[in-house]
Length: 131
Image 1 (cartoon, rainbow, N blue to C red):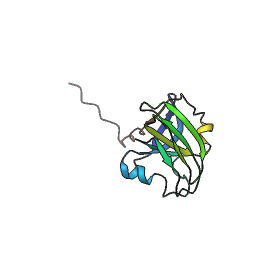
Image 2: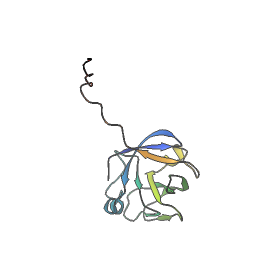
Image 3: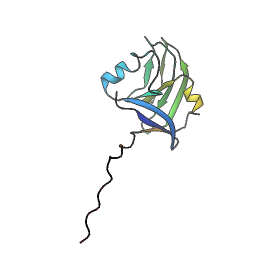
Image 4: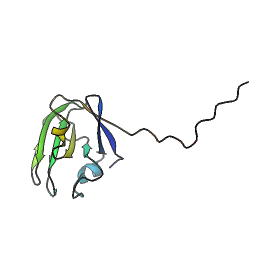
């Protein structure tokens, strides 16, 4: 899983940080190794059109997205040992249960990720001497 990224909803920073699983291994493991979401608010899986909760210890909100980040379907509170699928989805966002409602994510919303900006260097750049 890559470093945490900012979750943008309809062009605004939601304040949530999610991990990105865009390789086979990170998608296969997903959140299975966690007992709860501590450091992150969720996980963005790409490509992904179906999820299962086999072996999960807690419920999640599932948000299915098209290729451009448009929300196709929201499944609130998917419980352990259940599954969900969405025809036409290309990406899936797994969030802490209840967070999709809190963030007002619904069909038609537009979601995106962005990496945090680089940390500023310790010393400011030195201007070139004038000639």
